[in-house]
Length: 101
Ligand code: SF4
Ligand code: SF4
Image (cartoon, rainbow, N blue to C red; front, top):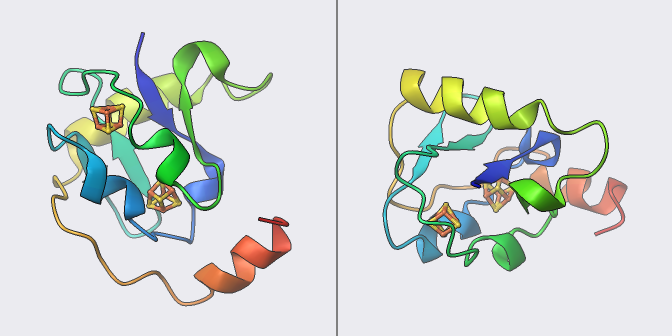
């Protein structure tokens, strides 16, 4: 099992998740974050930290979101590691409100 970032992270990048990860499992591109399943120890610390509920344990993924397991595995190999929090992307707060979170 692993822990994965899903679509709600796109355009947000609050990065609260990164600050609690004990093993530096997160990677980042221009849009969102990904978790490297080879590094993640499934501690679940990041799951409640995400303000837009973008992170799920693999077994808890909502129906239709299973493809994010492969996306996280692939994109985490292609993108740089992120170990420090970043400024949220422009519009991140608007997106959170739009999601009702
Ligand atoms: S806290 Fe959630 S939305 Fe923000 S970067 Fe992490 S996974 Fe993405
Ligand atoms: S589950 Fe734990 S180890 Fe995996 S990405 Fe989240 S905080 Fe890091």
